[in-house]
Amino acid sequence: MAGERGGHAEWGGWIILVHSARTAVAAVVSLLVARLFRLPEAYWAPITTIVISQSSLGAALKVSWQRFIGTALGAAVGAIVASYFTPTALFFGVSLFVLGLVCPLVLADRSGYRFGGIALAIVLMIPRAGPAWEIAFHRFAEVSIGIGVALILTVAWPEREVVALVENVNDPPPKTDGDQGRLSELPRSPAALPPATDERS
Image (cartoon, rainbow, N blue to C red; front, side, top):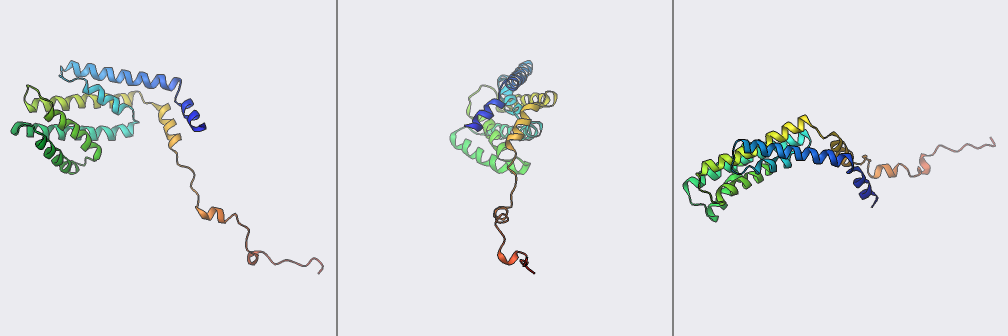
């Protein structure tokens, strides 16, 4: 209970205000940029921004790269499959399997594969009137805008207070030598004690 009260006290007041304002500004900017380019599903841009802007700069860069490369692959595979085959559950499953095999070739990890699978599902499974390549490009552009806005915000408006708190909370406990530390506190054996001197002599 004490830990919960401490965590609640840390996540409060000014930190909540700054974090909420930062997230809202980033999401609105991302949405407006996507609408400026008249993308049909502009809401994907702020969704991506919200996901990435919750991280520190180092974490945001890693998440951004995985989301970028994963979305590009998923959209490309979806466009290719939709151009030559009727999108069915079977082709969707095969495409998702192939995407998982391709991701490691471009250094995309499981996170990249997850984002790629989402893009693939959107391109293949949601019926639209336009050609598959146009749908795939729109999806990729929307995510790219969201990534770009999130990274710019992370550099221009870093969330130092929250990062410091997270680092303090995540600090590992001080290392001990295991049982050795406890054994060193035991009394020494009689053989290790210095010889007693006879006070009478």
